[in-house]
Image (cartoon, rainbow, N blue to C red; front, side):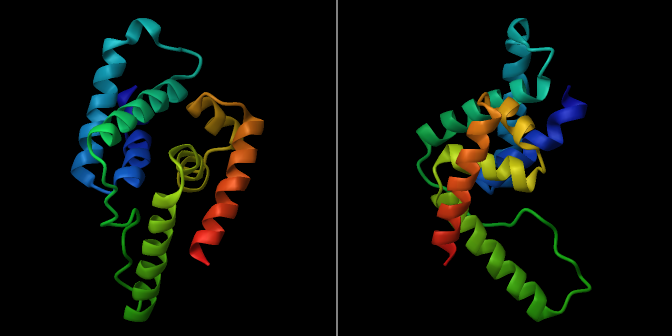
Length: 151
């Protein structure tokens, strides 16, 4: 399970915490908790089960730490780009991350899974334990709110 899903869980957590070491710790905690709760493992939807654990670990983290760091981006830089292009991309990324940080946790999770992880609405619903229709409604609201924040 770790080999199949660790990278996805890490990226999901990293987008939320923007700290590589913290995301690694939370990823490890997620799989440790999964191991402890193996008796309740959902063999039909392992990814959704792991995302639910990761969201719970994230919620536990935010309960004890009330800041949301926005230090790094989530994609590597291309050394062949011009300085202007890199600067524009970095500014756009910072605006996007700041906007994401302003969204409520459930909307941020949906946007992260749908547009950063590339999940379908159905996969997102399974990962978050909500219906596909609810994912689409919340996605629409999140994008509308994000557009307002970025304008």
